[in-house]
Length: 394
Image 1 (cartoon, one colour):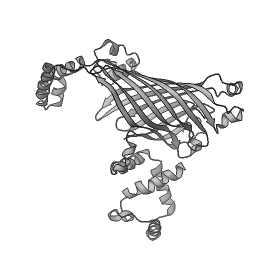
Image 2 (cartoon, helix red, strand yellow):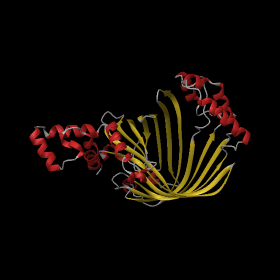
Image 3 (cartoon, helix red, strand yellow):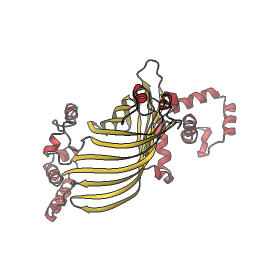
Image 4 (cartoon, one colour):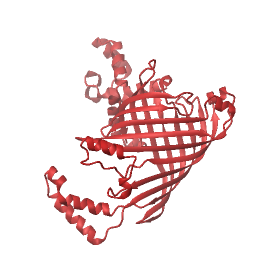
């Protein structure tokens, strides 16, 4: 199915960009006209096939085509907040083959209600739909064949952040902004004591923010062919912390970012090693009831009963270098799944827990290079995979 979807994508989206008689004056030929054109022009069909294969396996072409078609049509608004990563996957095994893959992550707020809001924080509820996973051109080459989709209800509380400024402070900020607007030289602007004063005032009005999210969810886990499925019902707790003021003690003691602060300093991005208080790892933990449906590995060992499973995840993203026109980020994610009170059959087959780790360098211009190790539900062994591709954000 994925194979035909991508080929259709190329015919209806990529081919219209090909210059020449085939799409003269923006009028697309039908299949018969296209075949006749090939016969008259003397172009071999095998050459077209090879060209299409090259397009399909070029992640940059796919992203450019996707960017164009979605930016031209408002009907695609439902895809807002969709993150796509077209990439080539290559396992560390000498026998593994490279294959075109696509990772996706999407979420949308169906209904959101703010229960309370003050200068100190806010509380609200939210109904959300989400989906994420990995698919490949050939399913057999998918090392992390795991898709998730769910509907969740959230209760969240945010505490801290911005402090309301006095009228005198607001007037001072307006005055500094007007003076800075008169500086046209970029280097002079960056070194201006007015800019430092402006930033100091802003930072003095920023406090550490704490974000807590409690949710209940229901959904499905599957492989990309939907031949293996789990139905999931559970609850999850999420926590995020941001020390917005870079001069705060908490920001200075962000031990998770210190190695990357040194990298930013050595690459000339920062003038001195400065850990960021806004990049503390996000933490999620939860408890789910899993109802297996066509889980072949569990069925093979004779245990297809429902079970409780704990899960935990932590994600981290920080800039490591800035070049002209782009910022390079390092992002990492660790996921852990563990069945509670597994049967002897499940333990003997090593199906009771799963650990998945991924790390990547991502440019703000879209380039992506990653490394992944571990296994997810529906995997029976760990995989080590290298990825290169492009990221597309809606």
